[in-house]
Length: 140
Image 1 (tube, rainbow, N blue to C red):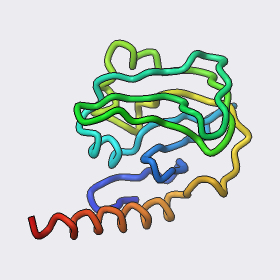
Image 2: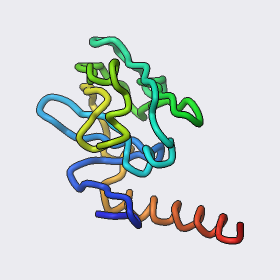
Image 3: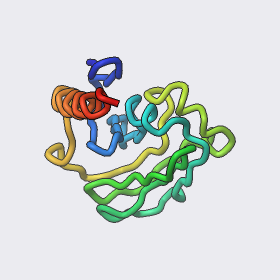
Image 4: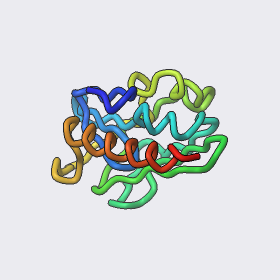
């Protein structure tokens, strides 16, 4: 599904902080949405947690640096880090090229779907967000 020109694959959950979560086997892959990547204007560095690390609800799971700012990824539930995308140490820019194929890390968690958005809700939310921003800058 799309929110304007930005794709949101249907096989994932989404959060308002531009994070996607995709169930896979025994865990959840975590990445950044195409819209989030576009707003970031290029990811140049990523700080990843250690495999096996236990991250409490609301604590920083990972951080990424862009040419504009440093952003943090946190989740509304506890999680354990199962894997990190090792390719990101060498070239964090790969997320800029394909934010849905390149994931950041994989976690194990007892998560509640209530704390996440399904694709239809995410597209509705992000369409409204984009529309407000475009309206805000239309006069400039």
